[in-house]
Amino acid sequence: MVLNQTSEFLENSEVLPRRRHKNHETQNCREARRIAPIWRVTIRGMETAPRLLQSEALRRCTLDECHAACCLHGVWVETDKAAGILAHAADILPYLPPEARDFRAWFTPEREPDPFVPSGEVIHTRVVEAPAHYGGTACIFLRPDYKCALQVAGEALGLHPWHFKPFYCILHPLDLDEEGRLTLDETRLLLEEPASCLRPSESLHPLREIFAPELAYLGRLTDKSRVTSADDADLR
Image (cartoon, rainbow, N blue to C red; front, side, top):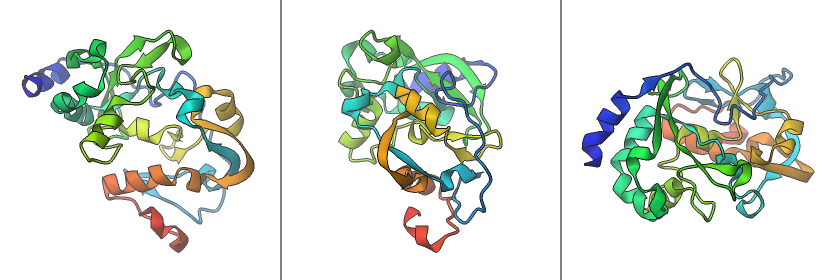
């Protein structure tokens, strides 16, 4: 039943104008100052902006701190990834609360063109009311324990935790600048926004090290990642 209805559901989706960012309501990307590109990773044809060469007094937040605040607006999902999620609905359903187990309600009908995903088009996860969550709303895949059902299902199946995760979920809080390069918002904006997934640190940390797991995974996922510094061969 799931497989038969997946194509029909996606084909009947409405095409709307594109909005690039996962949390476009709160993000304000600005291009960083230009630095000689001594390190670079290209993922899905997108190069890193000089911003990621910097070090910042930032650290990752923990789930106990943020309660998955970044999930308040849901996320834009590649249409081929959405089809894959629906095809594995039976594997994902057990890890969702009962009220979120209707797979037909997992995505909204709206579509947008997106040149930065292989399918060229994205569809949005449904956002539901969640009074106890930051902002009062949450992605339908967010569980009461603040874990993502897609990630929990992937782990339970023995897959990489991000196997079912949409591209923009994995990328966050990294973003794309106006030239389509991987970048990061200004530090001040990140620290002012609870959904940024980052917190202040007492010491400086290279951004490329903070986000090494994302860069490494996305590089393997696309098989198009290249590193131009021998010191960063471990990111392949």
